[in-house]
Structure formats: C-alpha cells, structure tokens
Image: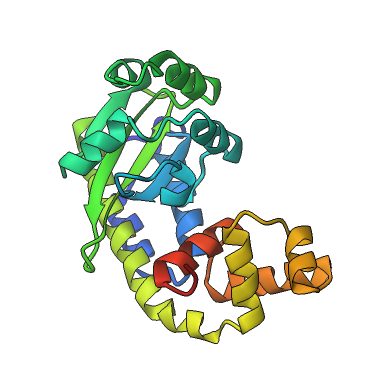
Length: 245
C-alpha cells in the first residue's frame, strides 16, 4: 500500500512495534501526527464516548491535532449532541468512512449546513472513525480526516489495527501513571480545580491569594506530572482519575 503524499510503502507492522515502545502521551501525540500524515490525512482525534448529557467535544477529546479554533466553534454551535458520527460510535463497534456532506445530512437538529461549512473551512471533509475499547471497559474512537479520497479497504484494516493498539497503549500508560496523580500538591490540585471551573490564571491568583506567575507554575507542574500536553488535557485527566471533581 502506498502513501498518498510520499508514494512510499506504509509499514503498519513497524508502526505497531514503534508504538509499543512509547512511554508518554506526548510520544503518542507525535506518533499519531506522523501516522496521520503517512496515510495522507490531515488531522486525527482520539476521544472517549461521552455521556448522553455531554455537550462539549473538548471534554471528550483525549488527544487531537484538530485546530483548537475548530473545536471551539464546534462546541459553540452545539454540534456534539446530534453528531451522526458519535451516534454511530455509540451504537456500533464497526469502523466506518464518512463524507461530511453525506453524514451531516443525517442530522435532525437543523444544523447540517453549519456543520458542513465548519469542516469545509478547515479542510476536514472526508475520513474514517475506528471504535475502540480498552481493558478497563471504556469505549472510545480514533478518527482520521482530511481532503484525500476515501481510505481503501487495506488502509481501513491497517488503521483499525493501529487505532486499537493506540487506545490500548494509552490505557497502559494511564495505569502506569496513575500514581503520578498522588504526587500532586494541594496547591496544584486547587489550581486544576479552579481551572476546571473555567477560571483564568489571573482569577485563580485572586482566589488563592497567589501571583499569576505562581498559578501558572503550579499548572505547568501539574501538567507534567499528569503526563499531558496542556492544562486543558491535565484538567480532563484529573477529572477522569478522580483527583478533582
């Protein structure tokens, strides 16, 4: 099978072997960026299946290369609740390809055209999702999207195997790093808690009677201890681990 961008063979077995040696979530982020490019796509998203009451894609996302502006606009438009892709992921474990025009016309919320326009704006008009499940029973999916033609059957099989291994690796790393949450100081937990409540660093500094610089320092340390890329992901991970509520 040939890479659409470089016309070089994509060795998915080598990718899976490489994945087994990755030791941090940031390593997996870089791995998925590379894999996405090798298969001629533009962006990826790893998500956990949100509850029926969830309204924000950002809270369901584990790691992603989607532009932050796209996610913000997606959530501002309230597009998660009736997402056809998410509805499929919730009811089936079968991987599927999609085109944003066709799939969004399945919407019943009257937001089809807004959703289509948004994904066209960022060049994410075709792709595929691969439902996955980890050993702890948590369900999720990994999606790859861009402007290339639909993935071939062989590519779908390869990406399905890679996606399954990625989700399992994230689970294994989370188990290994769970003790990292126990190393958080009370101040770091306080800062994460207020960040989860939507407060800025300046607002947190006023609440905790600290300097804004100190608040940022605590948040940066918490982010590193939780092996996450930024404070948004640190908050999401802290919530999943029960460190904050």
